[in-house]
Length: 180
Picture 1 (spheres, helix red, strand yellow):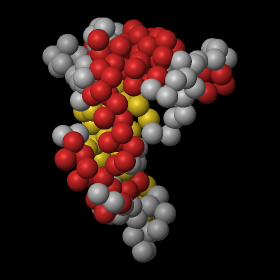
Picture 2: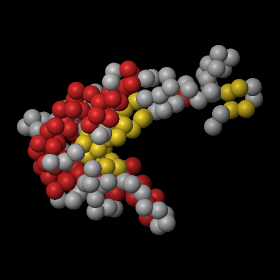
Picture 3: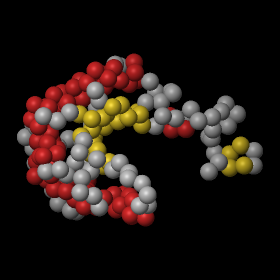
Picture 4: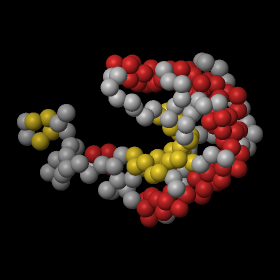
């Protein structure tokens, strides 16, 4: 898995102390892979423990909850599980990914109410060609909550890289020199 590969990379570089992050995987993926049906708070906690083990770390520095995930359990089971993981020292910070401003505020409020923990970050698409997060007020909402915005895909999938031009719309090759 990606986490195991990351662990191997960290083991070979003893000079650096990387910040380790991971994301809660979609519970439906486990059914597709044939590893069982995950439901409830205990399953999330087991997933976090397994991630920490695959990463070869006692604690994951940033654990992100994806916005496109639907989880079966009590209304607050995801928040309760990450708070329990924080209490146990399995994760140091909780972040979200692709949450809009209202959902982010709601998640942050639940995280504080249930465990007394702050929401650390929100990762979302933001680039030179996609400024929706700015126009919608998401970045301002992050600032007001003290949440670190993490821009994903800042070059807009390469569209803002200069590779794609009107004379080279595919970005693949210009003249005889292919791009890596």
